[in-house]
Image (cartoon, rainbow, N blue to C red):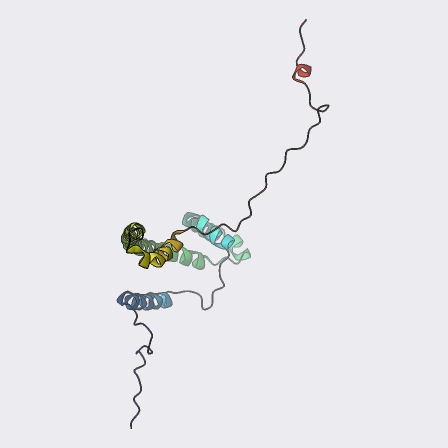
Length: 191
């Protein structure tokens, strides 16, 4: 009897089939990764530190242009510092050219988050409505059967307990009656 080999994309028995949303998301992720792979970058870039990111983002393009102009105007200084004005101008052109891509990517991220939040909000409102009805339903004669379900719905809605220990307020320093000045000592008394 010939043995059949399942198709590689066929899920194993008992594994739920992925939803259409998951399949769509996987396709879009693959396209975004292809775009990211096409984007020019160093072969194996070292991750930037927070300080490096801050320095680069807070330094304006105008400053870079003025530094390149100075290096070209004072060639002795530029040569002494081994300044490559072409790399400065390349960084300027790259920043100006890719700024629009960065803006569009941020806009896309915002739109995706908003779309997901709207869908979730709609589902949350429905689920909370079901929960309100369920709380009332369990108080009826037929509701005892579904009480465990309502308790299971209630559990994720409860806020988790804080693991932080509450700070014990420091006791004020003890004062002795002799050390406490009397209000009459600070003001001269009139006779």
